[in-house]
Image 1 (spheres, rainbow, N blue to C red):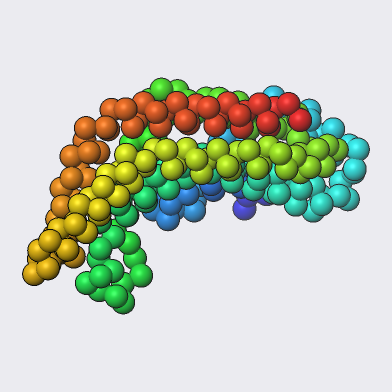
Image 2: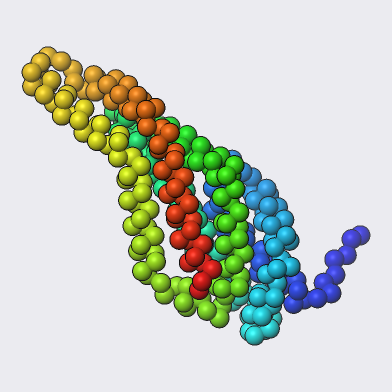
Length: 261
């Protein structure tokens, strides 16, 4: 029979606090936020990452633990979960820029027309959202842009704790600027397809008035998809270059925010 014995309770609790923060953040990371990743894999990944970073962040966690005592175990756990949720949400929001841009592109190209033929369907096709999201994820991983993200999370242990969490939560100007910039970035990435769709809609409206017997609704599906594909293919190089710049800019803003509290 295997017996587990804790020889240093403070060290064990410190590791637990590091683990719960990383676990909360990992749950929102682009690679782990899908249902296709089993929960044991997410927990094991958080354990490995926590173990890797623990030597460098342990002094900061133990400082809070020594200041508030072991009796504040659940209080410290909740605080670290809260910090992890905020950080994870900000990280996920950066990737959601590209998902949102893909959703608008999908809408403008007419791939969501499934609902016209099957009104009971509550699911959208989501073609470009997935393509763009995973393409950007591969670009980010291959360019090494995940390293600053991990360094930023590591820096939060020294800059964001129970002692100064009030400064972390009392920064509405950053959140306003961050999410406003994210919305404008998603809009600008999908702008070529939005303007193309507006032009096509105007042209098809003129055709509908000129040739009343023409089924404009059916023609619009074909024209929107065909022209939309050509426009996206023509602008795809510029799209991913700009998207990478957008990611780096938002990551830099996020990194400065979490490491200068």
